[in-house]
Image (cartoon, rainbow, N blue to C red; front, side):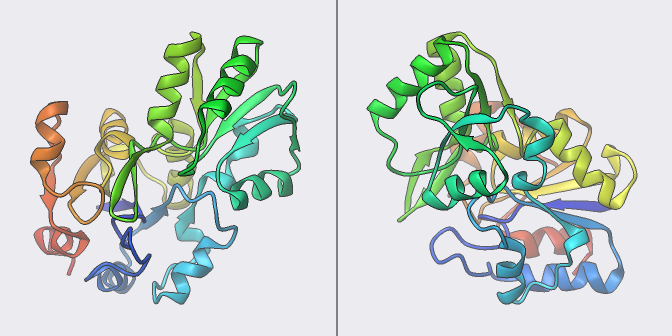
Length: 253
């Protein structure tokens, strides 16, 4: 078996951004047994997020890592963009060569931030109704900050699609392009892979549609499987408290 592994809520916790119990040991076991895997994060904030994970003690090499910033230019061909997210994300967009334009953008690009305003929502509505294209850096359902759960990019994309009638494109998870780029690192077929994540709607359901096996961990967004699975009618192959427990069930650790 091969693995796609989420980061936030799966390898590191949402509060302190530190390794979840057993996560480092799981990665070490994969490395020791030479089991192919790719870290598939939705990070758009840190340009060297891999380095951050390595500093935490995760023995992850560049060939085992991918994030949406690495594939953005293959998806977003427009030059003038209105980018919304934390300051570091907007700076990353500029560093990739895009021109920030909040008057007549060709595209709107959404990422996570806690202080979206209704004035910004109104601006985005106007841009989209005037013909700008809509992109999400990923389609995460919720994100956690200060022990509270906030609507994430996937929810915002659906809101703007409903408000303006536009369609949107997703750069990171769970887009087929992003998963395909991850596959280029390990080869094989989708049905050979198990994805491990705490995000049912933003990661697991899309992966399952492509034929991947799914493991839902309760170390991140959700306090119990009952909070989300019955509402979606989705049954992961594995439900576990954390990634180490997934490894135990599969005989990896």
